[in-house]
Amino acid sequence: MSQFNKAQEIYEVLLHQTKNESDKTPIYYQLGRIKYSQGEYSEALSFYEKTLAIKQQSLPSEYPDLGDSYNRICIVYSSMGDDPKALSYYEKALAIKQQLLPSNHPDLGDFYNNIGMVYDDMGDYPKALLSHEKALAILQQSLPSNHPNFTSLYMGIANVYYSMADYPKALSYYEKGLVIQQQSLSSNHPDLASSYMGIGNVYRSMGDYPKALSSHENALVIKQQSLPSDHPSLGASYYNIGMVYDSMNDYPKALSYYEKDLAILQQSLPSNHPDLAMSYNNIGNVYRSMGDYSKALSSHENALTIRQQILPSNHPDLATSYNSIGSVYYSMSDYSKALSYYEKALAIRQQSLPSTHPDLGASYNNIGVVFENMGNYSKADSFYERAVQNGQQSLPPNHPTLQQRTKNLENIKKKL
Image (cartoon, rainbow, N blue to C red; front, side, top):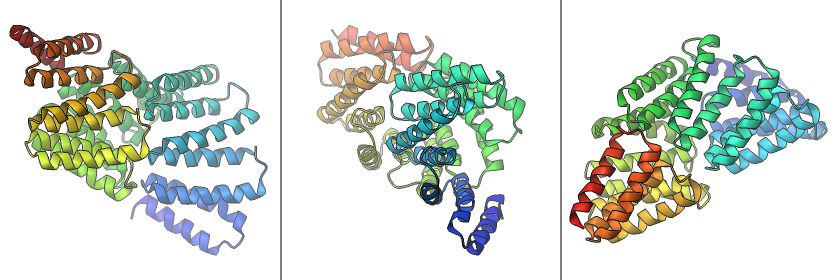
């Protein structure tokens, strides 16, 4: 029996024995923490909401304990992918803390950091960076430079730069966080795994697949030692390793890891969670690469349905779904449908991403490929040029994606 299960049994006995409702508050809180640690987010939310309801009946609205309850609830909503609700609760908690604490208190820095992470998930990168910068200014005033609180902040900043495809800055912040963790945590602590995952994602995006695999395998080993076998975070490691094999064109291995990820997510997350959409999307990409277009379309439509339910209409993840469906239709030689979906993806990316983001380059390249196959070489040339220009700004010179785009441009010039 795991430590989580033993603790749960003890608290459930205490809950049964406790008659006074207000005395149940710390028990509900601890059960919420246990359920969250087990990846059972809906049950965690239920316990935290019971805690909050009891406190609201007996405490003034600005009481510190209410802020703590709001904070726990928004962490769960964030993990469940419900970013608007998470942001709402973070702002309630922050308002209480601002009334009670000095302006440079590290707890305020933690709140700004968490708000930045939510904005990052929502695709609003300028607001995300602004929140993280507020957090950094506070922590630099109040804590020593190697304090563990900096780790979460550096991770948050790194994640935003990664989302913006500024890979050198992302890698720098991930490594800053890792150095602090290695000084202050045990070698199998789950937070170390998060840093290795971030570093692995950067190396994959930079085209350094051996370093990416090494980092993700380090993360997986730590998680296997410290988490239950069905924890969502294990699924994330399987997903990331699958992504590397996918990038290396080893599709059977990629599919195997993606399916491990999906199996865990289906057990532990709500059916409309964004991580499920990501899993379906990547499985669809592998099926397309393997030539199974009906399974590819089915997977991508599952992903799109989830994203349309939970994301704003200009979110970059919707563009990912449209782009993926367009790629399936392209592989089926249905160029008009492919072009339609690629253009939907491009429109969203132009609204929501910086002009140097490599996903914009991918859209330009994909549209160029369709126009080339439709025989419209002048339009193909125009989009290929944009794709190469984007790649020169956002990718290392030896990156395989940039090399392929350059080859596409050279080939179309010969057809003009």
